[in-house]
Image 1 (cartoon, one colour):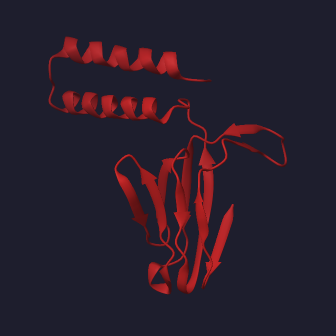
Image 2 (image 1 turned 120 degrees about the vertical axis):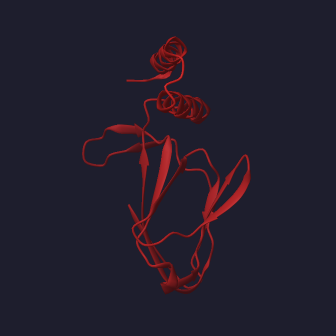
Length: 144
């Protein structure tokens, strides 16, 4: 989907809907991760930041044309009013194997730790154990 905001336009605080339906196939997709792809150079418009609230506060995001931000679809977010120019973007959703963003974060952190241990050639048995735990959690939590 695409959006176009010009002077005075905004999109208020909201959480994305939990399920989208493909209009052609009727297939349902759970919206676990939201994505916003910026298509306009930030010098071409003023304000219009994507503001995402999370545990650590509010993050204002205004990226270069062609850059994209991903964030949990459970996050409250909004677009600040445009004060000059036009902002065009593309937005869409991704269904993850893991629907819970807390579980996804744990798996992400564990995978990064495993990769660091692999790079350091840390104790092989300990690495193998952690890799097994990672895959068993993935197996328990994934929805395929």
